[in-house]
Image (cartoon, rainbow, N blue to C red):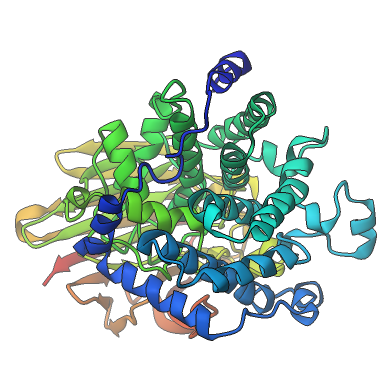
Amino acid sequence: MIPFHQLREAIIAVQQRPTTLTSGALTPARRRAHLEAPHLAHLMKEIREEAERARREPVPLLSFSDFQTFHSLGTRKEFEKPYFERRGRLLALALTMILDDSNAYKETLENLIWEICNEYAWAVPAHLPDSIDQVLTANVPPNRHVDLFAAETAHALAEVLDLVGNRLNDWVTHRVKQEIEQRVFQPVFESAHHFMWTSKINNWSAVCGGAVGMAALLLIDDRERLAGMQDRVVSAMDSFLAGYGEDGCCPEGLAYWRYGFGYFVYWAEMLYEFTSGSIDLLKQDKIKRIAEFPAAVALSDSACINYSDCRHTFRHATGLISRLCSRLNIAPPTMTSVPSFHEDHCYRWPFVFRNILWTEPKWLHTQGAEGTFYFHSTDWLVDKRETSTGLLAFSAKGGHNNEPHNHNDLGHFILHIEGDTLLADLGMGVYTREYFGKERYDHLHASSGGHSVPIINGEHQAAGEAHRAIVTRYETDQGAVRFELDLTHAYRPEARIRSFRRSFEWKVRQEEASSELTLTDHFIFDEEMMETERNLTEHFISFHKPVLSDGEVTWSGEKGNVHLRFEPSMLSAYVEPVVIPSRDPQPLTVYRLHLHAKRLAQTYTCGLVMTCCIH
């Protein structure tokens, strides 16, 4: 990305740390502009409400009972809920103090910071060793283990010191610097041992690297030491960017694009500011293509193509997007408002603060990109068409079943009508020990049983890179899109198929505000199978309850319908409601349509037609 000699030269040349690393010149006039900006009004109200609540209520307790729950039961929420509530309070109290230029919450903020400094570890239990034996043999003790959240905590506290540190008690300021040095800087930068995240080709390398890199830029005065620290961050960022194809697709999904690439951009922009623009890591062709990814997969202000562990509802970080659009001259995805303070249950400092500082209203309420987008690195196809009355969108994916935050979802597809995703991807499940363990594919979210793909002779798709799709056809012709996948190797030999090909033909009639998707599945079963043994079940996943009639299924949304036609003499249909866990207080109900066929010939073709109509 950048050679060390160039990085060192730029950092050594800095005579005095700029005072604008986090916010630019936060003058009284600029504070007033943020406080009075209509697009920030709701967010400012939420921040003040949370600050006032923090003053009234005691700091949430982080008990040993909650700490050990992950190790005993595998659940994360018991410890992480109060842990992240503390971070939310830090965010609200500090932002109120910064933007109001007031000391009204000074004592509350100081006490909270002191409690955060008292925490046994800044890393969460799910990221610490599982047993005391593992703790005793680890390279670092728990309070020096740097995971995503330890790095984020260090960065948040460093920015608080940068912005209001001179108004905090000197003991608090000293304690924060001491804790960051001992808990984060020394284990990350002073040891020959690297944390595993420095070589990860996923969000971890960018989040951990970007957070500790920004903390160092804000706190370290020794320029030689700082140059060496930033060089290790650059190495982690090289690993991160290697996880993206040259086409800019994020195989982890859009939520992890926001997370990982967000921290890359926040760090890169701080380094740019620190070096007075001499190091500009955003001006690379691949970075621009990565920055354009959200516009390709966004469907509305709150919906997107959400493969992998991405929630089915999604809000863009408007500050991040605004900065990328301004710096790289790219078009934004559809955005209508700044996200809520509570959009991110982890209350990550840079997203909310940059949403305030960087969001430009001119990038809100713009029409999103339309057309056909194909990502060769992941075999994601997205087609979005604005019609006379709204958006019609289709997406399908290939790839393999060992992707970052993998779901067994080869050949899965999504249908979206003007704000409503009617044939859906369930997105991320609830994060537990089992969800990231060998039981991952017992969870509906990650299993092929939770995707719109068939079960063949009782077999689901299997996990592993060997289980992959091969694209055999991709073409566009006069508004029609044709996409064909060989999915034979998506299943284990126990599925007893010689061949399985799935083809999609998608046509949009823009003047009529309708479209048609023809789905054709062609199977060749093993010769040794008896006709009575051959069977399959086509699955279709939706959050909307389908209505069955003779040879037809209808999913109805607020603004449109999807009608599926099938041959009832060959396929028996029924709808299965499935209650699935959710990060929200209430579980979700998903509807799985089963189209079952049995006693099949050795060669069998299942042809289905889906018509999408906007009301």
